[in-house]
Amino acid sequence: MRTTNARGTATNQMKCIMKHTKKTLAALGLALGWLTGSLQAQSAVVVREWPFSSNANPAGPEVTSSNFEEARATVQQGQFASGWFEQDSMLGTEKGIWDLGRKGTVTLSKWSDQTGPATASHEITVRVTQWYDGGIYGTLATVDVPGARLANRSQAYLMSGSIGNWVTDETHWMIDVGASADSVVVTSPGNGALIDKVSLETPIPIVVPPTLSIQSAVKGSNSVEVSWPVAGTLGWQLEANPRLEQSKGWAPVGGQPQVIGDHLVVTMQKEGTLFFRLRHP
Image 1 (cartoon, one colour):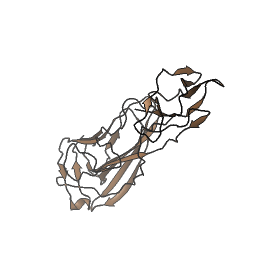
Image 2 (spheres, one colour):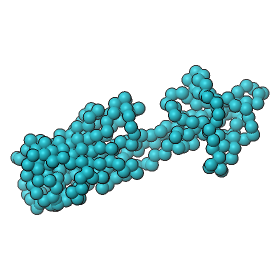
Image 3 (cartoon, one colour):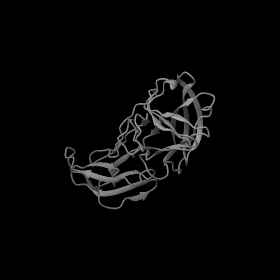
Image 4 (cartoon, one colour):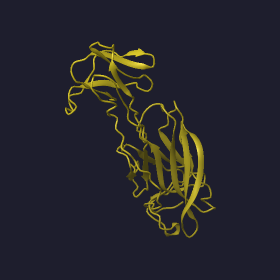
C-alpha cells in the first residue's frame, strides 16, 4: 500500500442550484370575489465534493453548492492501510489520496436535507475517483447506499500515471417513496484502494405551494371561503394580513379548516381588505 498525500484535481461537472425557500407566498388577493394562485415547483441539485486536500477525518465537503453544511466523510482504514498522503509521482499529478487498505471504508453521512422516508422518489449520484492499474489495484471499490437501489453504473478514465490510470466510478441510485437513505459507504476490495475524490449529487427537497382560492361563501352574504387542496398540504398554515407591505402583519387565521370534497375550506366574515397566504413552517 502507499504512504504520501493530498488533493484530487479531476473535475466533475457541477449542476446549477436554485435556492430553496419553505416560506413562500402561495396566493394573495382581496377577500372579495375569486382569486386563485400558485407557484411552480423548482428543481434543484446539490453537489458536494471531498477532494481530500488534508487528512481531516471526519471531513466536511470542500466544494459544495448547499447551505446545509453538516455532511461529513469519515474514513475507516482497513488492514495494511497507509492512510492519507499528499502525492506520489508514480500516480501522476493527483493530490490528496487515501490509501484505505483492505476493506477500508469512506462513509458519507448527514448529507440529506430532509429526514424520514422520502415523500417522492428521487435519484442520487455518487462518484468515486480511484486508482486502477489492472494489477494490485485491478478491482474498483464498491459503493452502497443503504435504503436505495442501484439504477446504473459506469466508469470514465481521467488522468494517467506511469503505471495506471485514475478512474471515476459513477453510480446512480433511486430512493423510492417511503424509503429512507442517509448514508453512502465506499468499501475497498481485498487488495485495497487508493481514493482521490468522492462526490455526491443529491436533489433538494422542494416544498410545492398549493393553489389557494378565495370566493364568496354565499352570494350576497358577508362571508368568504378560502380553500386549498387537501393532497400534499400537511403542515401548511393559512395566514392573513390587512396590509401587504407589513411583513410582520401576517397572522394565523382562526378556526379549523373543514374538509369539503378534496379541499380544505375556511369560512370567515369579511372585514375590509385582507390578503391571504399559505405558509409552511
